[in-house]
Image 1 (cartoon, chains in turn yellow, purple):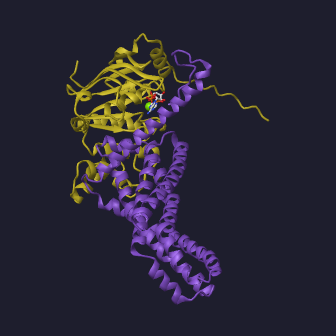
Image 2 (cartoon, rainbow over the protein chains, first blue to last red; image 1 turned 180 degrees about the vertical axis):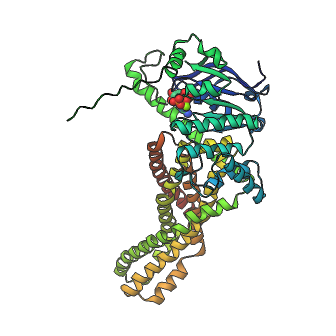
Image 3 (cartoon, rainbow over the protein chains, first blue to last red; image 1 turned 90 degrees about the vertical axis):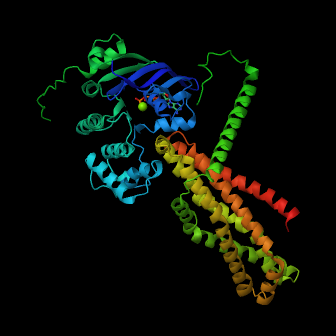
Length: 260
Length: 275
Ligand SMILES: Nc1ncnc2c1ncn2[C@@H]1O[C@H](COP(=O)(O)OP(=O)(O)OP(=O)(O)O)[C@@H](O)[C@H]1O
Ligand SMILES: [Mg+2]
């Protein structure tokens, strides 16, 4: 198989009595798109939050390029995590700042760039790239959900991550917008060679765009493999997932409307 | 987390011990909360001495807390000064000591009323919005987003609010002193006919700089307390917009009660060692 860039080993995480992750293990291939699928509330978000370090696992290890993040010093951990970008489920844009300041934020605060002209150039370039030039002065509240997602993506890309994690990037968007976000993910992956890890409920899109898929259920990765392998998987819940997503298109019977 | 007793697999507690167990849980939870508060406080205080110093954010917060509160502080302290002068003139006239009104009002304003009224107004106006703002940032994952970009959210969000509060509270308290005494003068001298010379003279002889300064020190301490408490409740909000609302209420109640207790302790100490 391809080289691994990130791997999680035997991750456990509980919240009070709620045992969310109970030994999740998966390796993410470098430069590829990997999707994690599973039912609502199984802990997909928790899993990737432990990877980027918003949550600390109770037990288990996380590796980046062979180095154990979970064993590193806090200082080193922060350094390693600079390689990670994360697109939050609801974009998490700073709502008191306009689009320009949102995208400039990591440049100014994380990279401590001082050169105003350079910052402006990068922000404009990112906005161009996501297909939304000229919205610098808008506030997040003035944007649609799809636009916010894309601005969130631009903000994450400003730090040039090696690994980009997406939490349900297309949930709540109409099919056309979902498609455009999926295209952006593929472009992020192909144009910049960024490893993408995404959580999604959109099984059809998953099978189309991802190179590798992990199925999370009951706190453990039950099945994993390339899309072709997963189609024939045994797990009943996964089977249901796949069958429901690829069933024949709905036949709509048109009945003559009776006169009232 | 809300754990239900039915689903836990542990041994059943005898019925008579349930209240004790619940009490124990409450104590543990409060201790945990207190511990988290002190960790937060420590992190904030260390943040005061860490670079980068974000002057722009300091200025922004000072403008929000300070400039935008001038009118309300002036209005409320004028009212306090006027009401107080009205009552004091009645009392003092019983002893034919109306000239003392200026000193009495000035002294209480400087030592107690100006810092306390200013702080309570600022808690209502800025403390609650501070909690709501940070709480919203927490529940919409903006604080997490900052962390994923390797920016320390306490340093970026809390430290500027703390610095601004500690600077602005004494300034507004000074303003409250001035406006309050003007209001008192207006009522006592212009309306109730107290001799202006006596009013001013007694004010000058009995109110010393140390009285004013002690009030300003109190205001700085209260600004510190308000910003840390309100920021804390916002920073650890949970449970969506309802949770943010609850945090704001708790922040206002806790910081109001907290500063009144602190005021009593400071007043006691200052009476013993300062005046
Ligand atoms: N910070 C937290 N504190 C307490 N419980 C949490 C926390 N984060 C997640 N949980 C709990 O962990 C479980 C898994 O949540 P998670 O958000 O990972 O689900 P998910 O698989 O991402 O679901 P969805 O597809 O709906 O987003 C839920 O029961 C949730 O209540
Ligand atoms: Mg989720």
